[in-house]
Length: 236
Image 1 (cartoon, rainbow, N blue to C red):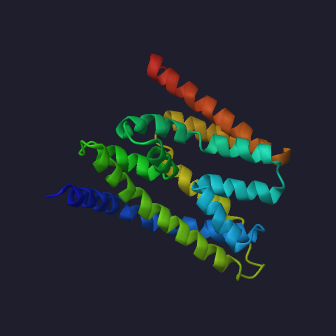
Image 2 (cartoon, helix red, strand yellow; image 1 turned 135 degrees about the vertical axis):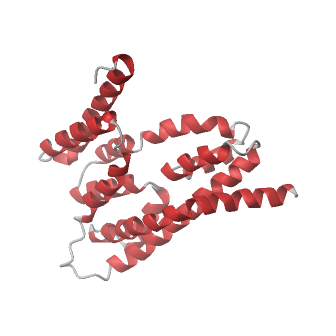
Image 3 (cartoon, one colour; image 1 turned 180 degrees about the vertical axis):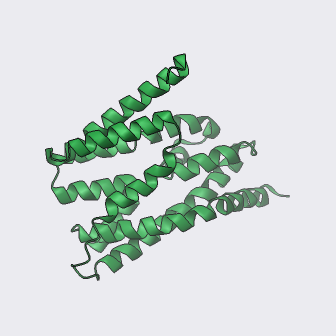
């Protein structure tokens, strides 16, 4: 088997791994596109936002804050906290791409989301060269990216044609709930969700959605505290 054939097989293996996930990505992408238009963005701006901010939760939060008239600094801080997990993902996955060129690493970082990270870790264990790991990673990431972009475009175009009476803004919290629930699996994540959600709800009336930022900080602190107590003394 030639090296090119081996890389093609690795790419297809990544694609086959992510295919079941794409079924769940499509509704999120459609809603993201539709809601963006209903919040005042043009279909093309909504589509461009999906390309430049390739992160579903951050996109939805950005659109909501833009709709609320929040200052740019608040939007950036909110997106930073939402995407903070990608810093940990990057640190964890970086050793597998050691030796790659800076441009290649930047490209791979752009495609880094939850699914390529998780599936990549499993796939990398079976691949002992940099090129094979990159091929598998792109096999996971590219179909996911394409599905999200196409879904967002279709949703944006459809949202522009829906009657105004169809208020789709309610879909934003529902999408967030659907994204968060699978991640709540242990005591630390339960504490983070409970405390963060409570603080965010209590601070709902604060300007510029500051309640969301305070909720994120409180949730992180609660999750870290519970994880530390559990690991250190088994007291929780």
